[in-house]
Image 1 (cartoon, protein in one colour):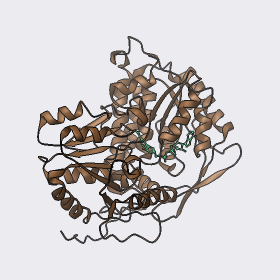
Image 2 (image 1 turned 45 degrees about the vertical axis):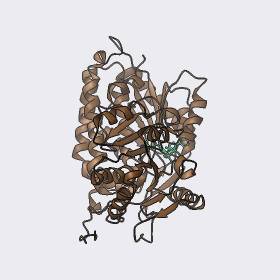
Image 3 (image 1 turned 30 degrees about the horizontal axis):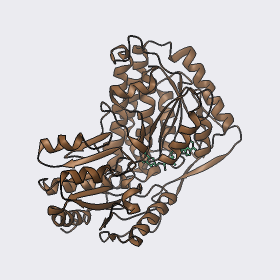
Image 4 (image 1 turned 90 degrees about the vertical axis):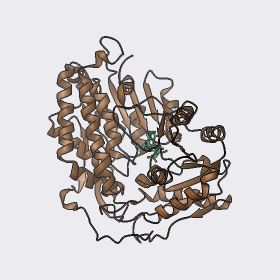
Length: 478
Ligand code: NAD
């Protein structure tokens, strides 16, 4: 199928007004860090410097935790749920009002296509605040006792793949349950969290209820190890998650970890091929594959292997890679040089171990960090590309003959975050879902998110649930 030529349709950047430098957001105000350190955040699509951001040291984290404690004790935990709900509703509405600006900012700082930040990330951010606003005055009906208590101050650390959405997943339930927070965004994508700090000011949120400290791993470590924190919520790599679990083990802190994944997307012979191919593409090429629950292992029933592969190759040839701000773009930039190096390295390992690599003809921009949509066939379960999280637009294809073999192969991973099943038979879907060891199993769809639905992992994908009634448990003293 030839690729249609579209005229460029760039979203305007002028809706975003970037400051030259950003301070830390502590106790309701932006201010400098104690030791005056800063780092730059760049656009991964062009390598242009977007802004300078303050690096919070231990003294800043300490100030933020104290502000959060004061706000917790004197304001937020004492406020009736119906009053807290008003703030959450207000935040949700401001996010909607500023949606276009937030989408452009997210695409600039992260490299993801505007189509995704505009149609997926930002609407879900608003939905998370609306949903949790609804819970704030109904917690006694959530099934955690007649008067569930908040935990206190939450220290929250998030990754760069869905910067504002991960912030919403963390802050909305914490605030709804009566906790105050100190949140650290990822070092490569701090800008939407800082815009969110402005939204807190706009919503007149009492000072100290939300504090945003920017910085890299050391800032994150200072936050999760701070003795004044009652709860740690982390989303990121399994390696860092294990370090945090070890650091918190001897403390009374309540911990939830949302970590990596290596999800199987299982296509049976009776699945409608075109629909399954859309699901495979959405599963692994959405957000350049920077998705913890990405369907990075495709398991295809042997009898339809060649049909599915031929359709998949045809479909991949129609994907448009390029300017994240162009509304026609399907595949944007890789978030950082470090992530690009990791994707390249694992892809080279894939070839060296004997798998066959294929990408559609695809011109990569000269500046910035780019990787073409890639498929590996001839992959065996022992290959590193079938076992390790690549966190990029790279799909490993394996085959199976029977449903039992599909289950065996799908579960043969240290992770357990998500899985997909494609078949016409409802009974087979249920049979598979009850055997797949994954927190989420999608049937005839993939990468569907909703604030009412709990999300989380098994095994090395972490513990605890976010979203839905189950997600409230992580922020209540139950
Ligand atoms: P990462 O673990 O390197 O970083 C995540 C965050 O932790 C960043 O803010 C980072 O600054 C901070 N950090 C780094 N070292 C730290 C330390 N020692 N103590 C405290 N904080 C520290 O991961 P990443 O590369 O930013 O994100 C990619 C990973 O996140 C992938 O493995 C992906 O699967 C996972 N992820 C999981 C989910 C989920 O819901 N399960 C969602 C998104 C991403």
